[in-house]
Length: 592
Ligand SMILES: *[C@@H]1O[C@H](CO)[C@@H](O)[C@H](O)[C@H]1NC(C)=O
Ligand SMILES: *[C@@H]1O[C@H](CO)[C@@H](O)[C@H](O)[C@H]1NC(C)=O
Ligand SMILES: *[C@@H]1O[C@H](CO)[C@@H](O)[C@H](O)[C@H]1NC(C)=O
Ligand SMILES: *[C@@H]1O[C@H](CO)[C@@H](O)[C@H](O)[C@H]1NC(C)=O
Image (cartoon, rainbow, N blue to C red):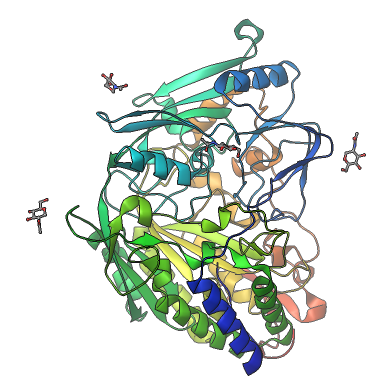
């Protein structure tokens, strides 16, 4: 999520100095815009995600938006829509999910924002539980828990996501220890408002406690059961961690990956496959009496001057159009070196990085995202992906591979990297492939077995018909992961094709669908997208010219690629069953 690259020395130095500027300085920023926009106050609305566009580049429409401020108001909103058979969707304050989970079907639906459902309702220090409203951000949750001396042990690294959103999509941190790495694994109760018949006033609050089977449906639900109003999470006493990053070459990564996760509670690995490097995060709990007040402010989630963002994007666009793979490799080296020098945003006290280990409290180290901090400054600075400025525009492919297949998957990617040595520098411009450990979950739509989640962010052209440099290699990795090794796509990320047949990978899918049928028999909270991923409707793949470039289809004919630009549909290089858009001369240093 962090880019830097350039064509000539002058520009490179400028970029580097700007880059160092924002690595080491604190700048304030404009908070992200509201994903819901209505032409009058709360009617005639559109919705997108925080990146300003869905995988198919459409935006969604809705007749109206509602902003309940407590559970009673939420019940009223859902009752009135149910009575009128209006399609609904819960939406969040920032809307960080990439696929169309927030879109009600058609144009006459209702958006129910959880923006004002953001309070902590109670904290019980003796049972170590916290009850919060579902629109609360991870950041608020971490802070409120810490004030009571409590901590959520594993969570996403970006704190701009909400409790309801994390549960809806199965969001997770990294750990093979404890009862699980997903936030949903810590849910011990929740309240969800669902449609109901006239006898119940058209809406009812379902209270689901730990031990009730429905919790396994409701704690990862894609939003199709109703709107979660409150969540009770089991926490732990606030603890300290000690973090050290160690850089190695990636020659034994395939062997090391599985065992490393067992050695350290918060382990993860950042893989730079273009430079054959792996950054191992050695990260463990330590006693509270170990000194240290470390903090984490990951550079990729900091507010960044919009001039810097525009320059970085322009340089990458130029490299893409010039087919300059060497340029990408040189600048990815620069950027990852700068990140390493900065301690990946870790500091000993919020100001200085003075070396490893960095020891600090869990709440100061577990997540970050200071680009959300609000000071309206007319977009002089912004989150790097804010669509209102020229900045990052990317695909994010994220999937979990079962532990027994991780070794083969890594070796396949390494074979591709050997065949096309410069092909994977591009992902390093977005800080490489993040490998996080996840545990099997009891949630019906949660992780099915222990494994490693691979998170890959890469360049997306503003023009849907323009292929990416080494288009074929990342397409092949995506298909190897999802089809050859049966990887589970992250519900809140990915491109359409990754969800092809996904529901067959979940052993308890049928139980989930039964609960959905019971809670929302008319499917008011379902949409084409959720029906498609749940295997209830066809149409997940959108077949048209250039569709494979956007991940809307797997190519089966050349027109799905870009034949006029030299890209044709061909089998993969390592996985022969893959069908990818290959530049036929395979002369990747020629202009595309
Ligand atoms: C809804 O909004 C769109 C664009 O903002 C506008 O063109 C259209 O006229 C509006 N429709 C109504 C019924 O207000
Ligand atoms: C809840 O969100 C609203 C709207 O963003 C904000 O004004 C308010 O301060 C938030 N409340 C808490 C307790 O954070
Ligand atoms: C905390 O939970 C325990 C066990 O459920 C209960 O007895 C106690 O009253 C709760 N304390 C508070 C302050 O709610
Ligand atoms: C820190 O606490 C542990 C027990 O939690 C104790 O065994 C150890 O001696 C303490 N170390 C210091 C330096 O106080």
